[in-house]
Length: 157
Image (cartoon, rainbow, N blue to C red):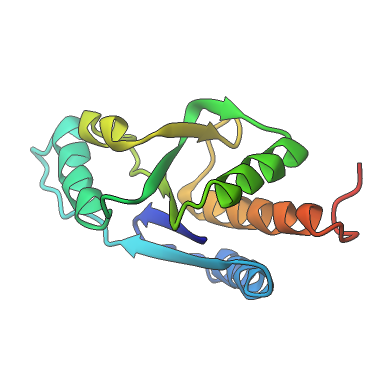
């Protein structure tokens, strides 16, 4: 199974990017994982948040395949403990999913088209974090899940 984290907007924090890259490097031992960045949508002063979500939605849809299992990272999604998330990923792997795509939307969230395209929603927290932090936190949680599934001593419970 390949895991793709699809994100809207680039990161401008070298520190966050370096830390995220470290977890991506560690993950290569366990699973195919990639982050794909959708460039920020160019907006004008008269572009409404709804229009911005629609433009971002078109860019997201263009990168999805019909066979993808799509999961939105959304504050209203299902929350998991690290152990539960590891189990969730294991079930996805055993189900024979070829590409599991997690999506982080833009600053205003997702368009209705993207909500409709997603099979599920997962929340990292009810709190709001910057998109840069979400990349790091989520990548670390994927790594943590892989170490849990492989009975390695990274996670302590």
